[in-house]
Length: 491
Image (tube, rainbow, N blue to C red):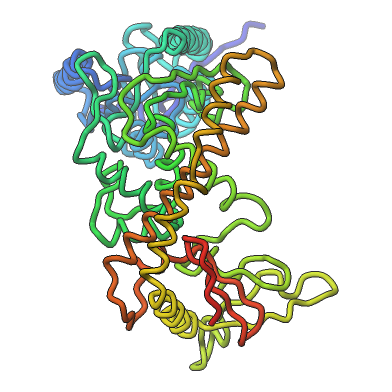
């Protein structure tokens, strides 16, 4: 017995469920991207936008939505591509039916990102068309072709990244120095591409180093520069202590250059990591003219290491941080807020390790008004001996700060190549730097003494940093101010 098969024709579109008889226009958008902001790429970027705008509008069955674009953005991941992410959001919100782009590599060079995004769009009945490869994602072969092409694009990106990395490391090995000049304070790019001092900006760099040697912390320097409306390397108004510290530790300011401090871990994520020995570094001595003399730079590095590292490091949250020492345990005083939630709120300074261990420190706490008052008294006591201090310094400076014997020994050791002699040479260099540093600190102290009136009436922050090395507190009747010339005054 023969069967009679009746065909019931489809009346709905496979993906969007619209009636086949429905002549509704498809809402179409395009995506354009160039990976650099170079001038030659700029014309390509503008040409893509113009081309796709006209291409979509010429079709009577298409309704133009927009051309979404990203300029100077990598295609290795979609995280920072604002135009791309905006387009996908609009598509998932049912504002777009079809997305057109030049090629798979313009859409994404990351295979996983590409396929994940395409599948999300497909679930929302949004099709993608890749013009160069002639791939329609609703086609039965679309996903297979897309997987192959995305993989090829990813491998191409890997190859480009490896070539760029090789080229950059070759430049490092050849001693060619480059810095982000737009965000680097103190230097401009010279005609040969090397660093040339920008004297206007160099004044700020010298001031930062001078303030640090005066005794100010990176935190207090940052506050002062912000208050004086000096712009940061990134042309921002507010300085951070990390920015100040990076300037204080950047070897380029002494004329040298350490290359490859950071490196890119993965070409897809573009994640950067501090180089801790994973790949070679290159140190170039005397690459350019220094803003800070090497001897001063080395002194600053030593002060940072001594004062701002380790368990008993100096704090930097206020002008008294790292300046008040406990007479019992030798630790620094820190600020504490009492009655923080009521009208009796006040800030006091006490030993940071007062209650550590079984034995408690017996040293008292002090409030800021008391510290300032005692400082004024100590300075006035010091100034009664002003003439004698200056006379004594002139008498003994050539003796206690003399480095001639050390310099003779340094020259002798420099002629040796023995390992033990090399270690001794480093020690002698440190001793010479210490004496030079101490001498400069005392000279700055004496200059400050000359310009300050004999009778010191009010607390002055600049004088505090210029004159005081630190305070040691034993009890309320035994507080000792140690000045930068080594004089100790008990108040």
